[in-house]
Image (cartoon, rainbow over all chains, first blue to last red; front, top):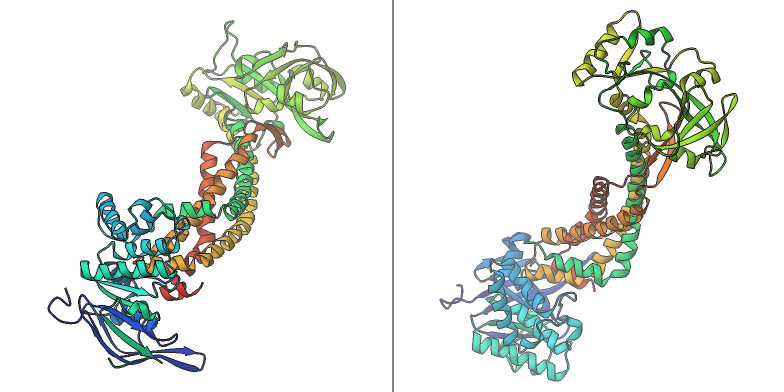
Length: 230
Length: 387
């Protein structure tokens, strides 16, 4: 696996992203260079519009850079087709959204099962993975609950279980505590730290909450599309 | 890998109000399609189930129906002596001259006049005609102005009930019996003595001659005999084939069903499309999430297309349920081969309901494709941002 030989799991060199709005162009990211290694818990911080979410989307292959290189787990993502990117994301990336993004008509169990439907696992094997993932986030007793029956904190924990159930190489979290109260935010951050420390997951978290950075092993700041020096 | 079906099914239930509206819209189209098609099917059934496989009908060449045909009296004498004709217990050949004409009678419902076929029959006819069952009264007496009427015709026209006297031709006739011809074309007829009918309607020739062949092989040889006999210059066909050919009456009804359903289907497909566009717009974040989780654009397209088809199938079920109560009801239309009223039954068959469901699937696909395509073309990020 990339990273196990000491090479970074993410190598970003001279990365640029420019958005065109009519005749005007806005540079969201300019000349970003960063290496992220296996087992790191990286916190990307910065004010709104600094480009931190854009960077996360490029790492997840959800958007294409306008310049530079973005090599993730040894793959240059801009070379991949939409279909290949979908498969790649399913195999390697666990994504946590600010607004949880659970499917409202599916139970906690079924929501967590979604990424596993794209794997070759049997129903029994899927069940074992789901129960283990929901156990890690402390929701073993909420398997049959629908999102509307859960608190915001619980919903985000289900979303974390969904992100880690397929055992991804990278967990990407976009403002995971942005919609939560302080207590729930702390629970979520504690789980993320546990995933990093106990399960060795490489995590990249975007946040503008200074307290959240205390849970990460590395914190990088962005401002106006540029990565500030360490 | 496809997005699981329960995702679509539960969304149909969760948004039950729009599901209901779309389902009823599709349902009305399907019900209309099934009902009009069942009219055509009813006409076909009435005509194709008529006739005995051993009966041969002999007509003037080039005519489409008995009412346009003429067979001279002396020809009948030639025909009844052909070999291959079955005989009754007294040794009499089962060959019956028949006279068919039209009478104009007011309908029971709206009083508007319509043509009804009156068949003058030889006493032997009753031994040749299948499926006749008197349900009340008695058979007409030869030599008297008496008639028996089919149960359906008695119900649908004024003055044709048992015991009533009615004008048929010049004089008054008495209805002495009511028969049930079990859904065949004879359910659209009045029967009386052939000599009385000929006299009443100034006819000096028969319309046709009906003969019973001894066996199936004799059906073909009788046909050849008739057509090769230069003395009679007539044509013959099996009674079943004769009635099957009259099913052309059903063709314009079928064409109307397809035309009407097609127009309504365009409207319903647009309604379905509107519903599906709104579902796609409301679930933009879910689409984005599914894409981030690894589901391909094709899986998203398939999922929304399946949902549209499921929605239309709900409509299909509603349509079948709406149409089902008319199954077996009797109605009538003009038989364009005879220009008389043909009575038949709405026939909502399983096959017709399957056709209705297949039609629903087609409407679901037509209405769902563009919204599903739009859903699948969104990038994950675009979908996630459309909140």
